[in-house]
Length: 165
Image 1 (cartoon, helix red, strand yellow):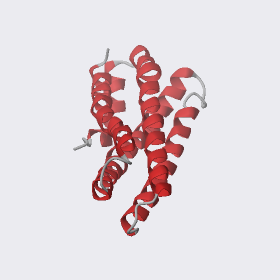
Image 2 (tube, helix red, strand yellow):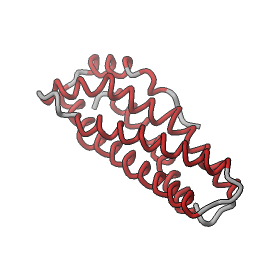
Image 3 (cartoon, helix red, strand yellow):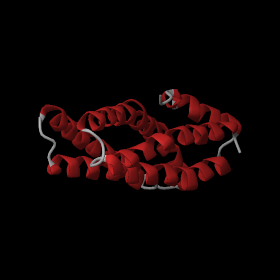
């Protein structure tokens, strides 16, 4: 396996606990104080906007073209691109819901349900997205790219080196 593909897989392993924390926050929506929920929402948004979305965008802009070429179809990564559209939409929804949470004096069930839905959806779509890359695209890249080609691909996706905190 090209060592650079191991680096991509290591990136994914670093993202997974943060993706799982979205589900954990969704599970806790009704059980924690509004201030704690607000803080967890802000942490989740920071991760999504500063790490996860830029990571997926770098893959989309660099890796997907290579995968399309290797698989012989410009549509080979179409579902992955759609995942990113959905993730961006869900991040925007969560941002709006968190604004309502911060501005409302009373924590309403409607806000709680909306936040929970968005967090569960983000967890599901992001988890599936990473899984598809790991189980479908990484093996394609490993089979068809030389070490030099893999190095070049990873260098072009340099934004991936932004680590979640």
